Image (cartoon, rainbow, N blue to C red; front, side, top):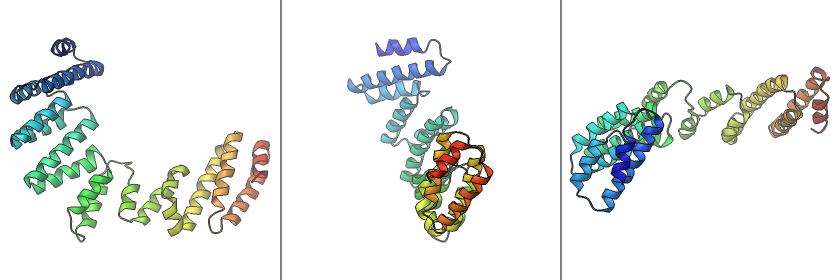
Length: 264
């Protein structure tokens, strides 16, 4: 039945849904073959004929590795990486490649693949970053790390990596350019301790922009909550009092805002 369903689903390939349906039945058929204890070579041949489906390609690679046919496993994974339109699948194939290179002691290929994972397939992944760091000496790592950062796609969020290596200046610089205050909360315990003045000023800069574009009571309430949070900083009480006084003059014709400020 699974063989028939797979054949039927392959009659009209084209759309993403058609591909997923065919992949589903190919996976079911593979499962049936395994449960029936079909000879490994027959399973390998079925997978080879259906390498377009990620699960079957992975199973084929696993059999090749078991048979110590590493060259074929590497070839199939590289081909899969190049041909798949799905980033997650490319990442999975890269992880398999990385493990094979490591197993074979192919250090250069291992580092190249790990670097590709970190900068292309799954940018700024913390686990891959940590794995790369272990591959370099303490003297080599800063230069290698900067090359990684430079190779990341534009807009990649590097904050977790900055925290990992205690690059707090870069972390503060990045946070200070963001306009979403709630994204900064994850790193605030560190930054508040190390850069209290800069963090408070960041809040001031962002909240002033928010106030100029805000016109609903819910948003006014949110502004007051942020002001209360700012009061916890050194000099926070003075700074927030000055902001409130300024807003009363500047936005005095916003009655809902004035009412919320009265509750501050």
